[in-house]
Length: 102
Length: 164
Image 1 (cartoon, chains in turn orange, blue):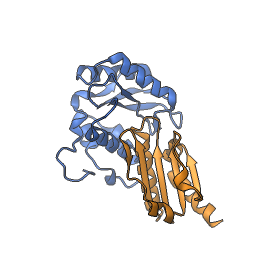
Image 2: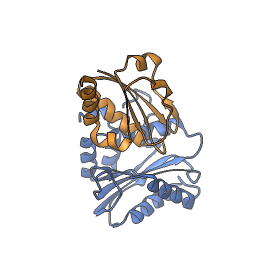
Image 3: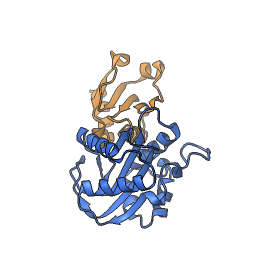
Image 4: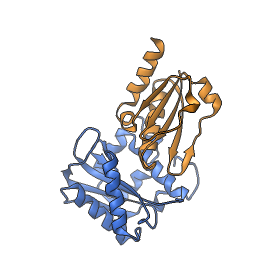
């Protein structure tokens, strides 16, 4: 499946980027395509394009702070704290896949 | 390195052997944070020790900085920081630390980040370390480090070197 994600943590220094690495590696190892945007202390990086969002089967928000959801209206969105991604990135992706197939 | 061939993208911009203290005989989180803050201060990375320390403790209250695998990554983004840097301490004794799995830690990586418009290169280097820490096999190697030089070499590795 095709996934997009956004990672953002309290200070925007460490957890954001750990979570991104976890999501990207987990998705790759499970054979999915993923694009992950980070919103950290130096701003937005790898910003999701409207095309990437439009094509995505689901959205993963790994966030510890409030972020703008409006880009993802009408999409299947799973929102979790970054800590959950650090612990269980593959399980999250598998869960999304199951829910899409249900 | 992960970011290509740029000479500047080198971990030595944010840490050197003087900021690494191995096998410390500390037994509490506060003791460890104090020792690492000492290193940062001695190396001229802080202009206001107290304000940095308070900002680190404030961040600790916002949520666990233990990331599992016996590693913690406390961090302070603070006006008390002169120059963005890392300090790494390992402890002989397991230290109680709030973490995702409530396990003690023996490796602590303290991130000291300048407030306001930070140097992008420095932040990218911290990102590099955070990405390394996403890999359990990297964390295992952290615990096996015996010298500061080995620690620096490990930090120079690429997240893509780890396949878990």
